Amino acid sequence: MNRSSRILATLLALCCTHTIYAMMSIKTVQEFDELKNAGTPMVIQFYAPWCEACTMIGRQYRKVAKDRQYSHISFATVNVDQAVELTEAKKVESVPTFLFVADGKVKARVVGVKNPDTFAEFLRKKIDKKMPAQTKSRYGKAVDSTKGFLRKSVDWIWNTSKNMMNNIKGWFVK
Image (cartoon, rainbow, N blue to C red; front, side, top):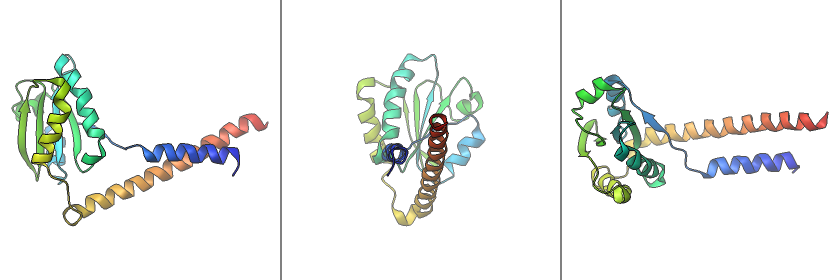
């Protein structure tokens, strides 16, 4: 294995060993309804960029979203200043507010936060209680589509990395 192949293999290994997660941003009532009816449990944070508590809690929220234990749950955010119609439709009157959605229904609502330092643990307990882990029989399509997405992502990373290595090699070979 030559040097460029080893570098490429290392890059690919690094990319594949880290958790892939995406924090969605919801802006309209229609987007919310589509996600709610998709069948995947989700936790949604309503926040405001000027809210200091939202900023502190946002770090903890992203930490939980990255946790592999909760890979069966979608995590999303709603900026109340940009999504006024959605905020009013969901009757969000203060921030931060969290909605726990499963089976197309809002299962729980948490308004405000008492202790930002212990929020991640509180959120984990709430998720475990309201949104138990999926089973393959019920969510087989979701799991299969995720595997397909990951395969495509790895292929894209591999091809992009190969192209980058060829370009870099071209700089030095001339």
